Amino acid sequence: MKQIAGRWKWIVCLTMLSALFIFGSSRKVSAEPENTQKCRVIFANAKGIVSTNTYRNWARTVDYGEYIQLPEYSQNGYRCYWVIKGGNKIRKYNPGANVRIGRDVKFLLYRYKICNVCYFTANGKKEYVSRRQKALKGQYVTLPKTTTTGATEIVGWKTSLNAKTYRKAGTKVKVTGNMKFYPVVKKYSSYVTLYRTNGQVYRSVNTSGNTKAVFPNIDIGNGDMFLGWSRTKGKTSQPEYYAGDRIPTKNGRYYMVVFPKSRDRAPSVLHQPEKHDLVYFVGDSRTMGMRQALGSSVPSNVKFVYKSGQGLTWFRQSGYGTLLRNIAKQPKRMKKAVVINLGTNDLRYYSQYVTYMRRVAQKLKAYNCDMYYLSVNPVNSMMIKRYIGWVSRTENQVETFNKAIRSGLCLGKNKYFTYIDTCTKLQKHGWISDRYNQGLYDGVHYSNETYLRIYDYVIRTLNQ
Image 1 (cartoon, rainbow, N blue to C red):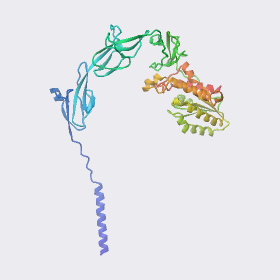
Image 2: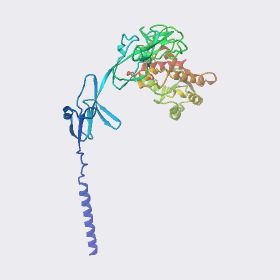
Image 3: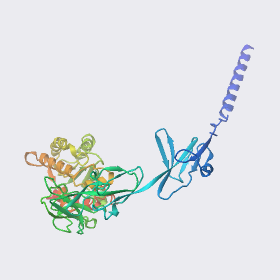
Protein backbone atom coordinates (compact mmCIF):
# COMPACT_ATOMS: atom_id res chain seq x y z
CA MET A 1 0.00 0.00 0.00
CA LYS A 2 2.83 2.37 0.83
CA GLN A 3 4.35 1.71 -2.61
CA ILE A 4 1.01 2.45 -4.33
CA ALA A 5 0.57 5.65 -2.29
CA GLY A 6 4.11 6.67 -3.26
CA ARG A 7 3.40 6.14 -6.93
CA TRP A 8 0.25 8.27 -6.68
CA LYS A 9 2.25 11.09 -5.09
CA TRP A 10 4.70 11.06 -8.02
CA ILE A 11 1.85 11.04 -10.53
CA VAL A 12 0.21 14.05 -8.84
CA CYS A 13 3.49 15.96 -8.74
CA LEU A 14 4.21 15.30 -12.41
CA THR A 15 0.70 16.38 -13.34
CA MET A 16 1.07 19.65 -11.43
CA LEU A 17 4.47 20.36 -12.98
CA SER A 18 3.11 19.71 -16.48
CA ALA A 19 0.23 22.08 -15.86
CA LEU A 20 2.64 24.67 -14.56
CA PHE A 21 4.79 24.48 -17.71
CA ILE A 22 1.83 24.47 -20.07
CA PHE A 23 -0.06 27.33 -18.49
CA GLY A 24 3.10 29.21 -17.52
CA SER A 25 4.35 29.19 -21.10
CA SER A 26 1.11 30.63 -22.42
CA ARG A 27 0.85 33.35 -19.83
CA LYS A 28 0.78 36.85 -21.32
CA VAL A 29 3.69 39.10 -20.44
CA SER A 30 2.57 42.61 -19.64
CA ALA A 31 4.05 45.33 -21.89
CA GLU A 32 6.21 48.10 -20.54
CA PRO A 33 3.96 50.92 -19.41
CA GLU A 34 3.83 53.71 -21.97
CA ASN A 35 5.18 57.08 -20.98
CA THR A 36 2.03 59.13 -20.59
CA GLN A 37 3.91 62.22 -19.44
CA LYS A 38 2.69 65.54 -20.78
CA CYS A 39 5.17 68.26 -21.71
CA ARG A 40 4.53 71.97 -21.60
CA VAL A 41 5.97 73.96 -24.56
CA ILE A 42 6.28 77.73 -24.07
CA PHE A 43 7.39 80.42 -26.51
CA ALA A 44 8.89 83.72 -25.36
CA ASN A 45 10.97 86.67 -26.48
CA ALA A 46 14.77 86.77 -26.27
CA LYS A 47 14.59 87.75 -22.57
CA GLY A 48 12.45 84.75 -21.76
CA ILE A 49 9.26 86.79 -21.25
CA VAL A 50 5.91 85.73 -22.71
CA SER A 51 5.26 89.29 -23.68
CA THR A 52 2.34 89.15 -26.15
CA ASN A 53 -0.81 87.19 -26.88
CA THR A 54 0.95 85.72 -29.92
CA TYR A 55 3.48 83.96 -27.69
CA ARG A 56 0.66 82.82 -25.38
CA ASN A 57 -1.32 81.38 -28.29
CA TRP A 58 1.71 79.45 -29.51
CA ALA A 59 2.05 77.63 -26.17
CA ARG A 60 0.78 74.07 -26.04
CA THR A 61 0.82 70.84 -24.06
CA VAL A 62 2.00 67.76 -25.95
CA ASP A 63 2.70 64.10 -25.30
CA TYR A 64 6.20 63.00 -24.35
CA GLY A 65 8.18 62.26 -27.54
CA GLU A 66 5.76 64.09 -29.82
CA TYR A 67 7.10 66.13 -32.74
CA ILE A 68 5.92 69.70 -33.13
CA GLN A 69 6.49 72.29 -35.82
CA LEU A 70 7.99 75.47 -34.43
CA PRO A 71 6.05 78.65 -35.30
CA GLU A 72 7.02 80.37 -38.54
CA TYR A 73 8.50 83.81 -37.99
CA SER A 74 10.48 86.24 -40.13
CA GLN A 75 11.45 89.89 -39.99
CA ASN A 76 12.93 91.93 -42.79
CA GLY A 77 16.64 92.57 -42.26
CA TYR A 78 17.01 89.91 -39.56
CA ARG A 79 17.75 86.20 -39.32
CA CYS A 80 15.48 84.59 -36.74
CA TYR A 81 16.01 81.46 -34.66
CA TRP A 82 14.13 79.67 -31.91
CA VAL A 83 16.67 79.07 -29.13
CA ILE A 84 16.81 76.70 -26.17
CA LYS A 85 19.20 77.69 -23.39
CA GLY A 86 20.77 75.13 -21.10
CA GLY A 87 23.68 76.17 -18.91
CA ASN A 88 26.31 77.66 -21.22
CA LYS A 89 24.89 75.92 -24.27
CA ILE A 90 22.52 77.37 -26.85
CA ARG A 91 20.68 75.27 -29.40
CA LYS A 92 19.27 77.06 -32.44
CA TYR A 93 16.32 75.96 -34.59
CA ASN A 94 14.98 77.52 -37.75
CA PRO A 95 11.37 78.73 -37.63
CA GLY A 96 9.14 76.01 -39.03
CA ALA A 97 11.53 73.19 -38.03
CA ASN A 98 10.15 69.92 -36.63
CA VAL A 99 11.40 69.24 -33.11
CA ARG A 100 10.87 66.23 -30.83
CA ILE A 101 9.74 67.21 -27.34
CA GLY A 102 11.02 65.19 -24.39
CA ARG A 103 10.50 67.59 -21.46
CA ASP A 104 8.98 70.90 -20.49
CA VAL A 105 10.75 73.45 -22.63
CA LYS A 106 10.85 77.17 -23.36
CA PHE A 107 11.82 78.42 -26.83
CA LEU A 108 13.23 81.96 -27.04
CA LEU A 109 12.93 84.02 -30.22
CA TYR A 110 16.34 85.45 -31.16
CA ARG A 111 16.68 87.96 -33.98
CA TYR A 112 20.11 88.60 -35.47
CA LYS A 113 20.56 91.66 -37.62
CA ILE A 114 21.81 90.90 -41.14
CA CYS A 115 24.71 93.26 -41.83
CA ASN A 116 26.49 94.28 -45.01
CA VAL A 117 30.29 94.19 -44.92
CA CYS A 118 31.53 96.30 -47.83
CA TYR A 119 34.98 96.85 -49.32
CA PHE A 120 35.95 100.03 -51.17
CA THR A 121 38.80 101.32 -53.29
CA ALA A 122 41.64 103.19 -51.60
CA ASN A 123 40.03 106.59 -52.34
CA GLY A 124 36.63 105.39 -51.11
CA LYS A 125 34.82 106.31 -54.34
CA LYS A 126 34.00 102.82 -55.55
CA GLU A 127 32.87 99.63 -53.85
CA TYR A 128 34.24 96.20 -54.76
CA VAL A 129 30.71 94.84 -55.08
CA SER A 130 31.88 91.27 -55.77
CA ARG A 131 33.59 91.24 -52.36
CA ARG A 132 30.55 92.34 -50.39
CA GLN A 133 29.65 89.93 -47.58
CA LYS A 134 26.40 89.46 -45.68
CA ALA A 135 26.86 88.34 -42.10
CA LEU A 136 24.91 88.23 -38.86
CA LYS A 137 25.76 90.71 -36.15
CA GLY A 138 28.22 89.04 -33.78
CA GLN A 139 29.61 86.70 -36.40
CA TYR A 140 33.19 86.85 -37.70
CA VAL A 141 34.24 87.44 -41.31
CA THR A 142 37.64 87.03 -42.94
CA LEU A 143 39.10 90.11 -44.55
CA PRO A 144 39.94 89.41 -48.22
CA LYS A 145 43.48 88.41 -49.04
CA THR A 146 44.05 89.46 -52.61
CA THR A 147 46.24 91.31 -55.05
CA THR A 148 45.30 93.89 -57.64
CA THR A 149 46.00 93.39 -61.33
CA GLY A 150 48.94 95.79 -61.31
CA ALA A 151 52.05 96.43 -59.26
CA THR A 152 50.25 96.62 -55.93
CA GLU A 153 49.12 94.30 -53.17
CA ILE A 154 46.37 94.76 -50.57
CA VAL A 155 48.12 94.05 -47.27
CA GLY A 156 45.31 95.09 -44.93
CA TRP A 157 42.00 96.89 -44.38
CA LYS A 158 41.07 99.92 -42.27
CA THR A 159 37.64 101.08 -41.14
CA SER A 160 37.96 104.67 -42.38
CA LEU A 161 39.92 106.53 -45.01
CA ASN A 162 41.96 108.41 -42.40
CA ALA A 163 42.52 105.55 -39.95
CA LYS A 164 46.14 105.07 -38.87
CA THR A 165 45.77 101.42 -37.92
CA TYR A 166 44.53 98.50 -39.96
CA ARG A 167 43.85 94.78 -39.78
CA LYS A 168 45.94 92.45 -41.93
CA ALA A 169 44.32 90.81 -44.93
CA GLY A 170 43.27 87.27 -44.07
CA THR A 171 42.45 87.98 -40.41
CA LYS A 172 38.99 87.63 -38.86
CA VAL A 173 36.95 90.53 -37.52
CA LYS A 174 33.73 90.57 -35.50
CA VAL A 175 30.72 92.09 -37.26
CA THR A 176 29.28 94.89 -35.13
CA GLY A 177 26.82 96.25 -37.72
CA ASN A 178 27.01 97.44 -41.31
CA MET A 179 30.74 97.87 -41.87
CA LYS A 180 32.96 99.52 -44.47
CA PHE A 181 36.61 98.72 -45.11
CA TYR A 182 39.24 100.53 -47.14
CA PRO A 183 42.41 98.86 -48.42
CA VAL A 184 45.95 99.48 -47.29
CA VAL A 185 47.97 99.07 -50.48
CA LYS A 186 51.63 98.21 -50.89
CA LYS A 187 53.35 99.00 -54.17
CA TYR A 188 55.80 96.62 -55.81
CA SER A 189 59.08 97.92 -57.19
CA SER A 190 59.01 94.90 -59.53
CA TYR A 191 56.44 92.23 -60.34
CA VAL A 192 55.40 89.63 -62.88
CA THR A 193 51.87 89.19 -64.13
CA LEU A 194 50.32 85.75 -64.43
CA TYR A 195 47.61 85.15 -67.01
CA ARG A 196 44.96 82.54 -67.68
CA THR A 197 45.01 80.60 -70.94
CA ASN A 198 42.51 83.04 -72.48
CA GLY A 199 44.76 86.02 -71.72
CA GLN A 200 42.84 87.34 -68.70
CA VAL A 201 44.95 88.46 -65.76
CA TYR A 202 45.09 85.87 -62.98
CA ARG A 203 47.26 87.73 -60.46
CA SER A 204 50.46 89.67 -59.97
CA VAL A 205 53.42 88.33 -57.98
CA ASN A 206 55.80 90.57 -56.09
CA THR A 207 59.41 89.99 -57.16
CA SER A 208 60.98 93.00 -55.43
CA GLY A 209 63.49 92.95 -52.60
CA ASN A 210 64.66 89.59 -51.34
CA THR A 211 61.33 87.88 -51.93
CA LYS A 212 61.75 84.29 -53.11
CA ALA A 213 58.90 84.42 -55.60
CA VAL A 214 57.71 81.07 -56.93
CA PHE A 215 55.08 79.99 -59.42
CA PRO A 216 51.79 79.02 -57.73
CA ASN A 217 49.83 75.81 -58.20
CA ILE A 218 46.28 75.96 -59.55
CA ASP A 219 43.10 73.91 -59.50
CA ILE A 220 41.25 74.83 -62.69
CA GLY A 221 38.03 73.52 -61.14
CA ASN A 222 36.42 71.79 -64.11
CA GLY A 223 38.60 68.69 -64.39
CA ASP A 224 41.10 70.17 -66.86
CA MET A 225 44.64 69.72 -65.56
CA PHE A 226 46.95 72.62 -64.75
CA LEU A 227 50.47 71.57 -65.76
CA GLY A 228 52.56 74.69 -65.16
CA TRP A 229 53.54 78.05 -66.65
CA SER A 230 54.96 79.30 -69.92
CA ARG A 231 56.02 82.54 -71.57
CA THR A 232 53.83 81.46 -74.50
CA LYS A 233 50.06 81.94 -74.41
CA GLY A 234 47.66 79.05 -75.05
CA LYS A 235 49.90 76.01 -74.55
CA THR A 236 48.31 72.70 -73.50
CA SER A 237 51.53 70.77 -72.85
CA GLN A 238 55.25 71.10 -72.16
CA PRO A 239 55.30 73.91 -69.59
CA GLU A 240 58.57 75.71 -69.11
CA TYR A 241 58.03 76.08 -65.35
CA TYR A 242 56.20 74.03 -62.73
CA ALA A 243 54.42 75.03 -59.52
CA GLY A 244 57.02 75.79 -56.86
CA ASP A 245 59.75 76.73 -59.36
CA ARG A 246 61.47 80.06 -58.75
CA ILE A 247 60.22 82.84 -61.00
CA PRO A 248 63.34 83.61 -63.08
CA THR A 249 62.66 87.29 -63.89
CA LYS A 250 61.79 90.46 -61.99
CA ASN A 251 59.23 91.53 -64.58
CA GLY A 252 57.30 89.96 -67.40
CA ARG A 253 54.23 87.86 -68.08
CA TYR A 254 53.59 84.13 -67.84
CA TYR A 255 50.61 82.03 -68.92
CA MET A 256 48.94 78.94 -67.49
CA VAL A 257 49.55 75.68 -69.35
CA VAL A 258 46.34 73.64 -69.10
CA PHE A 259 45.74 70.15 -70.47
CA PRO A 260 42.02 69.83 -71.34
CA LYS A 261 39.97 66.69 -70.72
CA SER A 262 39.11 66.61 -74.41
CA ARG A 263 42.74 65.72 -75.23
CA ASP A 264 42.91 62.83 -72.75
CA ARG A 265 42.74 59.90 -75.18
CA ALA A 266 43.62 56.24 -74.70
CA PRO A 267 46.11 54.64 -77.11
CA SER A 268 44.40 53.40 -80.27
CA VAL A 269 46.18 50.05 -79.84
CA LEU A 270 47.49 48.60 -76.57
CA HIS A 271 50.85 46.90 -76.95
CA GLN A 272 51.38 43.29 -75.80
CA PRO A 273 54.39 42.00 -73.84
CA GLU A 274 56.97 40.62 -76.29
CA LYS A 275 60.23 40.15 -74.40
CA HIS A 276 58.65 38.61 -71.27
CA ASP A 277 56.47 35.55 -70.87
CA LEU A 278 54.82 37.02 -67.75
CA VAL A 279 54.48 40.61 -66.48
CA TYR A 280 53.45 41.43 -62.89
CA PHE A 281 52.16 44.88 -61.85
CA VAL A 282 52.40 45.46 -58.08
CA GLY A 283 50.90 48.52 -56.40
CA ASP A 284 48.09 50.32 -54.62
CA SER A 285 44.80 51.91 -55.73
CA ARG A 286 46.49 53.37 -58.81
CA THR A 287 47.43 49.85 -59.92
CA MET A 288 43.87 48.78 -59.17
CA GLY A 289 42.61 51.67 -61.32
CA MET A 290 44.87 50.55 -64.17
CA ARG A 291 43.49 47.01 -63.92
CA GLN A 292 39.91 48.29 -63.98
CA ALA A 293 40.62 50.57 -66.95
CA LEU A 294 41.96 47.59 -68.92
CA GLY A 295 38.83 45.55 -68.24
CA SER A 296 38.61 42.56 -70.58
CA SER A 297 41.66 43.79 -72.52
CA VAL A 298 44.11 42.40 -69.95
CA PRO A 299 46.44 39.94 -71.71
CA SER A 300 46.58 36.43 -70.26
CA ASN A 301 50.28 36.89 -69.44
CA VAL A 302 49.80 40.12 -67.43
CA LYS A 303 48.95 39.78 -63.73
CA PHE A 304 48.15 42.31 -61.01
CA VAL A 305 48.90 42.28 -57.28
CA TYR A 306 47.48 45.32 -55.45
CA LYS A 307 45.79 46.63 -52.35
CA SER A 308 44.00 49.99 -52.32
CA GLY A 309 45.27 52.56 -49.82
CA GLN A 310 48.34 50.52 -48.88
CA GLY A 311 52.11 50.78 -49.16
CA LEU A 312 55.28 49.19 -47.85
CA THR A 313 53.73 47.66 -44.71
CA TRP A 314 51.13 45.77 -46.76
CA PHE A 315 53.79 44.65 -49.25
CA ARG A 316 56.01 43.30 -46.48
CA GLN A 317 53.20 41.52 -44.66
CA SER A 318 51.08 40.26 -47.54
CA GLY A 319 51.72 41.55 -51.05
CA TYR A 320 55.24 40.20 -51.41
CA GLY A 321 54.16 36.73 -50.25
CA THR A 322 51.33 36.67 -52.78
CA LEU A 323 53.71 37.78 -55.54
CA LEU A 324 56.42 35.29 -54.61
CA ARG A 325 54.06 32.32 -54.39
CA ASN A 326 52.71 33.05 -57.86
CA ILE A 327 56.18 33.50 -59.36
CA ALA A 328 57.46 30.32 -57.70
CA LYS A 329 54.71 28.31 -59.41
CA GLN A 330 55.95 29.34 -62.83
CA PRO A 331 58.70 27.47 -64.70
CA LYS A 332 62.04 29.10 -63.96
CA ARG A 333 62.90 29.25 -67.66
CA MET A 334 60.00 31.66 -68.24
CA LYS A 335 61.19 35.25 -68.59
CA LYS A 336 59.32 37.42 -66.10
CA ALA A 337 59.05 41.16 -65.43
CA VAL A 338 57.98 42.66 -62.09
CA VAL A 339 56.85 46.31 -62.14
CA ILE A 340 56.64 47.89 -58.66
CA ASN A 341 54.44 50.98 -58.38
CA LEU A 342 54.22 51.62 -54.63
CA GLY A 343 54.91 54.81 -52.68
CA THR A 344 52.10 57.31 -53.11
CA ASN A 345 50.55 56.33 -49.75
CA ASP A 346 53.76 56.76 -47.73
CA LEU A 347 55.90 59.25 -49.60
CA ARG A 348 57.97 60.16 -46.53
CA TYR A 349 59.39 56.66 -46.10
CA TYR A 350 61.48 56.49 -49.25
CA SER A 351 64.61 55.35 -47.39
CA GLN A 352 62.75 52.29 -46.09
CA TYR A 353 61.65 51.50 -49.65
CA VAL A 354 65.22 51.64 -50.91
CA THR A 355 66.50 49.28 -48.21
CA TYR A 356 63.68 46.73 -48.51
CA MET A 357 63.33 46.75 -52.30
CA ARG A 358 67.02 45.88 -52.73
CA ARG A 359 66.37 42.59 -50.90
CA VAL A 360 63.21 42.00 -52.95
CA ALA A 361 65.09 42.48 -56.22
CA GLN A 362 67.89 40.11 -55.18
CA LYS A 363 65.36 37.44 -54.24
CA LEU A 364 63.20 37.68 -57.36
CA LYS A 365 66.07 37.80 -59.81
CA ALA A 366 66.78 34.20 -58.76
CA TYR A 367 63.40 33.36 -60.33
CA ASN A 368 64.43 34.83 -63.71
CA CYS A 369 62.65 38.16 -63.04
CA ASP A 370 63.64 41.50 -64.54
CA MET A 371 62.87 44.20 -61.97
CA TYR A 372 61.33 47.57 -62.85
CA TYR A 373 60.27 50.49 -60.64
CA LEU A 374 57.48 52.65 -62.03
CA SER A 375 57.68 56.26 -60.85
CA VAL A 376 55.10 57.56 -58.42
CA ASN A 377 53.04 59.57 -60.87
CA PRO A 378 51.85 63.19 -60.55
CA VAL A 379 49.44 64.70 -58.05
CA ASN A 380 47.76 68.11 -57.99
CA SER A 381 47.82 69.33 -54.39
CA MET A 382 45.25 72.08 -55.00
CA MET A 383 42.81 69.54 -56.44
CA ILE A 384 43.41 67.35 -53.39
CA LYS A 385 42.73 70.26 -51.05
CA ARG A 386 39.46 71.10 -52.77
CA TYR A 387 38.38 67.45 -52.80
CA ILE A 388 39.14 66.41 -49.19
CA GLY A 389 39.74 69.77 -47.49
CA TRP A 390 43.47 69.42 -46.83
CA VAL A 391 46.67 68.60 -48.70
CA SER A 392 47.54 64.92 -48.17
CA ARG A 393 50.31 64.85 -50.80
CA THR A 394 52.41 67.48 -52.53
CA GLU A 395 54.24 67.72 -55.81
CA ASN A 396 57.51 68.19 -53.94
CA GLN A 397 56.98 64.97 -51.95
CA VAL A 398 56.44 63.02 -55.16
CA GLU A 399 59.61 64.50 -56.68
CA THR A 400 61.67 63.71 -53.56
CA PHE A 401 60.41 60.11 -53.44
CA ASN A 402 61.14 59.49 -57.11
CA LYS A 403 64.65 60.92 -56.83
CA ALA A 404 65.38 58.64 -53.87
CA ILE A 405 64.11 55.55 -55.72
CA ARG A 406 66.04 56.40 -58.87
CA SER A 407 69.34 57.11 -57.13
CA GLY A 408 69.02 54.34 -54.52
CA LEU A 409 67.76 51.51 -56.70
CA CYS A 410 68.20 52.29 -60.38
CA LEU A 411 71.63 53.86 -61.01
CA GLY A 412 75.23 52.65 -61.15
CA LYS A 413 76.21 50.10 -58.52
CA ASN A 414 72.71 50.46 -57.03
CA LYS A 415 71.01 49.26 -60.19
CA TYR A 416 68.65 46.68 -58.70
CA PHE A 417 65.75 47.99 -60.85
CA THR A 418 65.21 49.66 -64.21
CA TYR A 419 63.44 52.97 -63.65
CA ILE A 420 60.32 53.79 -65.75
CA ASP A 421 59.67 57.53 -65.61
CA THR A 422 56.03 58.07 -66.56
CA CYS A 423 55.80 60.92 -64.02
CA THR A 424 57.90 63.33 -66.09
CA LYS A 425 56.12 62.25 -69.26
CA LEU A 426 52.69 63.01 -67.78
CA GLN A 427 53.85 66.32 -66.31
CA LYS A 428 55.05 67.43 -69.73
CA HIS A 429 52.37 66.03 -72.00
CA GLY A 430 49.30 66.02 -69.76
CA TRP A 431 47.16 63.85 -67.53
CA ILE A 432 43.66 63.90 -66.09
CA SER A 433 42.54 63.08 -62.56
CA ASP A 434 39.01 61.65 -62.81
CA ARG A 435 38.53 58.59 -60.63
CA TYR A 436 36.37 55.96 -62.38
CA ASN A 437 35.58 58.61 -65.04
CA GLN A 438 32.73 59.82 -62.82
CA GLY A 439 33.73 63.45 -62.35
CA LEU A 440 35.70 62.69 -59.16
CA TYR A 441 38.61 65.10 -59.62
CA ASP A 442 40.58 64.15 -56.50
CA GLY A 443 44.06 65.09 -57.74
CA VAL A 444 45.47 61.60 -56.98
CA HIS A 445 43.72 59.01 -59.15
CA TYR A 446 43.49 59.08 -62.92
CA SER A 447 40.99 58.83 -65.73
CA ASN A 448 40.73 55.51 -67.55
CA GLU A 449 42.43 57.09 -70.56
CA THR A 450 45.40 58.26 -68.50
CA TYR A 451 45.70 54.82 -66.84
CA LEU A 452 45.79 53.17 -70.26
CA ARG A 453 48.45 55.60 -71.47
CA ILE A 454 50.58 54.71 -68.42
CA TYR A 455 50.07 50.97 -68.99
CA ASP A 456 50.95 51.14 -72.67
CA TYR A 457 54.09 53.19 -72.00
CA VAL A 458 55.24 50.58 -69.46
CA ILE A 459 54.69 47.68 -71.86
CA ARG A 460 56.53 49.51 -74.67
CA THR A 461 59.42 50.13 -72.27
CA LEU A 462 59.55 46.43 -71.35
CA ASN A 463 59.59 45.51 -75.04
CA GLN A 464 62.63 47.67 -75.82
